[in-house]
Length: 279
Image (cartoon, rainbow, N blue to C red):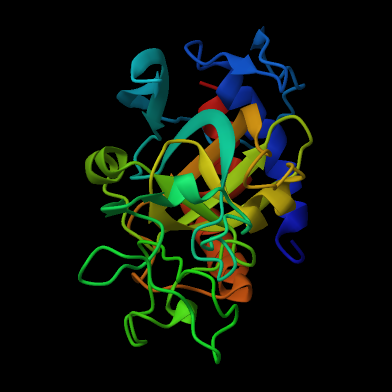
């Protein structure tokens, strides 16, 4: 990121302190070890706000593995605001990239992640349930038309550019229930922090799926291995979402950075985070 990067790097130390106080959260490293936590120093602003209401638990989201409950991730509503956050890992989403999937399964992601015959979610299908392939004038002829829940509805449903390209646009994914309970809508803005490296990125809520999932471009911004087949991070990623801030439309990277920064600063930025961390 360019212009907003300095303010986000300042903010991250406060966010780190806030997250370490959420005692329910246990981070995992890339090897799967549990119990590791970020332990930054807690800088104090010269004139921090005098008060900050307590955050509240929005819900404990159950993570399943192989159909069995594995752990719960607490999702917190921030004080006097619709904003909410949670800490998790990050799996990599390639949906929306025109070269995400193809019949030979040599695309950016494994075809199994797009669904299965009769139950496709990551690609557009015809009336018989068969994935549709791109034509000679499309970006990747012969590849399937990969889709995201957020789309430019002014374009044809078969146009690959209708959807949010995971390889170019930093976006986050939320489960449908989390979006419903939190009030988050497709197109809303977010800030995502890599608590281990200190890197951060603005993003847009662009797809429905699993908790702790982000686009290839978002992973690149955060310094995470962005291979959709093998990459990702087991823990140490903080997602801060701002419901009601989008317009339901895809955005360019420039718009995401500019509007995301305005949203973050309008919410309170580093001062708000420091206020909440101090309580």
